[in-house]
Length: 332
Image (cartoon, rainbow, N blue to C red; front, side, top):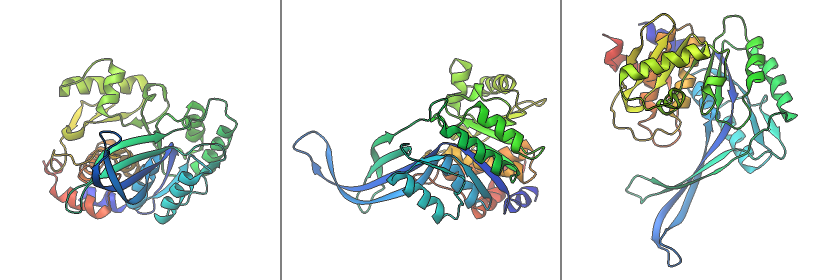
């Protein structure tokens, strides 16, 4: 089957991941008692897990699916930065093109999870450590140099913009110039999607799409129309709008919108990082010769798989092959 062949072709495909690298830190604890100082639960610390998040989660997904990620981003010369690089090393990811910047605080999202030995752990608190590279920061020139170095080695590029200043127009144009002719570039941007032009595709979630439309989107028709309007504004060839438990919607130049149902159960366990998985799978699919329709279908499957897992997670080729065999909408 064509989809199985595409997943097999993921192996060894080089994909640039340009964007904001985040450390997802999970602090695990068991409930102890209610504090006498305030109406809060006291947890007994049981452990900590450090997992690549944000653009680094997309990196981890590319690697887990058999691709070779070429990362361009920034971490601080601090404990979270070293922890994130260690997590990438454990996954076999070469991080030589990542800038380690003294004075920059590695973006870290700390989630506190509580639960007993026989129960699921639930998130009870979260705090974010954030920093941003300002426009004109001299360190951005080193980002451009890294993009020039790795762009020519790739079959495609994924851009993950969480708003921390690593992604900007000069970076996109530099990456585009460095990529081989015909290599697609796909962007996922939290806040600036309609200003990041010159890409081939984009992957907004429903909230981001509604923000660009200026109103709530509820029906397939409204979502398809808003996605097509954004695609035209960006001047890109296609756009995949992710819709959580309602699957995704693909709009492509010259084609009517196509709505892909969610794969598996619509009972979502955890949406953390699902957009990163979609971006990684979509881009890797295109790098392997998939059409936008085929790549969107594979990304839709990957998104449906990853939301059944707790915390920041990845998808394997084995899981994707199984989903291809089981997904009804691939066999209609």
